[in-house]
Image 1 (cartoon, chains in turn green, purple):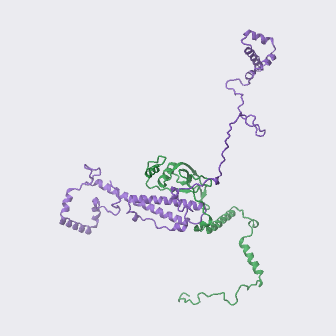
Image 2 (spheres, each protein chain N blue to C red; image 1 turned 135 degrees about the vertical axis):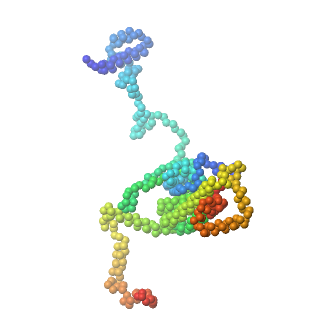
Image 3 (cartoon, rainbow over the protein chains, first blue to last red; image 1 turned 90 degrees about the vertical axis):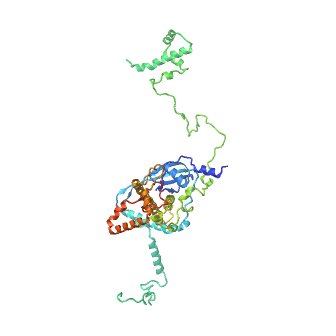
Length: 204
Length: 296
């Protein structure tokens, strides 16, 4: 059995030769990405700057995070062309470099938290707004390309259903409905809020 | 007149049969073979020679140099899954049963080391990203004035803290968007901004220090009392003697200072000339802390 000192010495040295050039103020942002569902746990994916190479990432992970890497695979994702605004010029965003490393020690990501665990992120509101925004965008796009769906395809809107239900409730009630129904004759529903307020002169 | 190509195959057959007859009957004379061929009809000789079947190669259509081989190159000729012929060759068979792959969900769970270095990419080990309330609970960035009092080691350490924090923020952003956790983009962006301001402050401080050092070095090159190459005994600073004599007489120096002050107050334009010949010992120390300055 090795002594702790010997173990530490063995751990300090990687199984590869690190680069000799010292960089004191690296200004890179490395993003660690959740693996795909069937990706084995000894593979870890990172988004790296386009200037990074495999040796850079290997040394970076070893020195900054004490993670030993056995092999690195690298690829570049070309981005789809997008528009600057609604009517701006088409351009292609800067490509994105990804690297997949083989880890000496496997790392399993935590499961995606279920909706109850996302309460701190206000998930319910976020989902509602996101869906409304997507629906609106789809609607605008349909208008733009001239494919406005027929009323029969869309179906009855939910507001219309609620209105119909309320109207049916009024019509089916015992009192029935008249123009004055719901209006209180004794004026008790009206409330003068600023009755006792003294308004300074010149403001009236 | 018939073309020669028509005659050739039959002639070849005749000659081939003669050769085969020679091989079969030991070593007959050349004359005897001629006699046999002359005596017997050609179709009979070819029938006799068919037992050895040596005619095939000689009757080949392509006999030129580099002609294709007529052997069957298909190893699977005649094999058919429909007719269940099986393979043509005997295959190796082992009595050991083949191992069956274990389904993915029956494999034992891989346990992650709680001290794994990649945990440093996460704010939270459960949700990876932290909720916006916790994301927004940060202080302000380090100011340049605070950083000026820090040593190089402290600044270097702080820089790496910033680098790892930015990696954590980027990882949380990615995870929040891809896994649809919810809100938090604005808080995260503000947190990232504060980290970047700190990093800018570190660069500012180090640049100031470098400029101060360069100024001092250039000044020292022109100073006769300082020898940057090390001199004879390795001493860089050798004070001149007349300075020591002057400092002994306190009354004289005081009077001289007073007169200088008077002159400075009376004639303001003279001040820049005085600063042009500044002594290196009187350099302002505010931009260059003593403890943190690099040394030769």
